[in-house]
Length: 171
Ligand code: NI
Image (cartoon, rainbow, N blue to C red; front, side):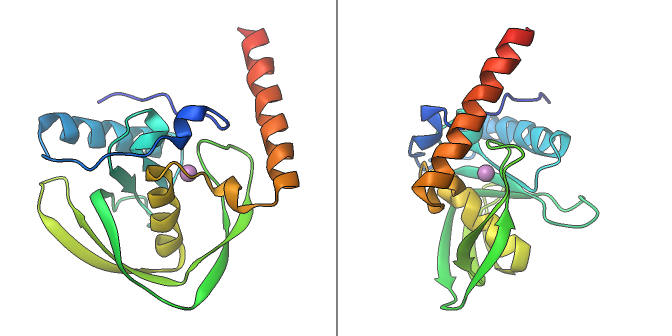
């Protein structure tokens, strides 16, 4: 397994649209294993392939308290969403230290292929529902800060670019 570098907002590659996976082969399984390792190492609850610069419809997540229930979703689809919306505080490994509230469906039903290539479905609510919607947005090239006001987004962009410059200076 290997740790993968995570693209940092406002990297334009975060806005690429991911293509469906046509076959869950050894390469895809290797990628999901690396993505899980990267997600756990970074203390994230979810990671989309887009964030590691692989533009295929793959995401991993683990919203359990014990961090021992990894989920792999390949070609995920929302087959049902609640009308009821919720606002939860979101963060993102591509936008570290920034947290803000985004409106999401309170409950969703998800269909995807697992690491074994077999289809499965599950119902999600709360943090898990938020996480699925956040990660699926990444696969469409959308980062959660795009739900915020233009002013907030500009501030975040400026902060992230300054951070990247400071890190470069230190190297
Ligand atoms: Ni994210």
